[in-house]
Length: 249
Ligand SMILES: [Zn+2]
Image (cartoon, rainbow, N blue to C red; front, side):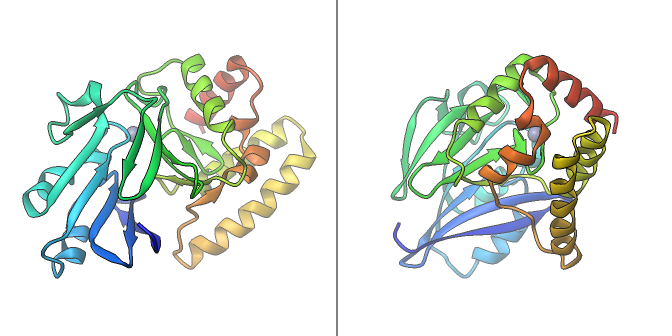
């Protein structure tokens, strides 16, 4: 792929589906987490020979429910967690994490990031600096723990934190505003005026985008490393306290 562009397709109330497309090869589309199929099918119906390469981050319905319709309408190749192939039969290529995937000229490092779910993977393209993080890291927040424990989820966030500041994060949900409200309340409680001031500025920026109905995704990892309380947490215990407070916010 040479002239690549990413596209954000809203789905359900606050989900995003991402595509990567190549201006020079319009018959190949990379899709990440198609939670539903209708927008993509409508979009691509004029391109009869289009082939889809699909990456799945984890087994939750709002990330995989579009697969069966897409595979009926297009030639598809699907990668996703090996452990979830029984739940998601469309996954043809099972991944465990640690692999290097070459798809359509891109090179993805497959990161194993359990916590939100145990099967969770993320896809990092080092040259482009793109991270498709599913439901592990959100802008100014992180995913709820459905299957993993606090220390597992903390370690997964540390793994993301070790990626370059210039990484652009494509997360699957538009939770930035709510996450910021929590983060501001948290900073206030900690009497961290410096952080609070920066969060208030970020809140203005995010609110302006949302008022224009624009996504706040992708976002710069470096900025989140400075402002996201879940990335600022120094220990699994601190992370646990934060995550529990966020669950009740
Ligand atoms: Zn999920």
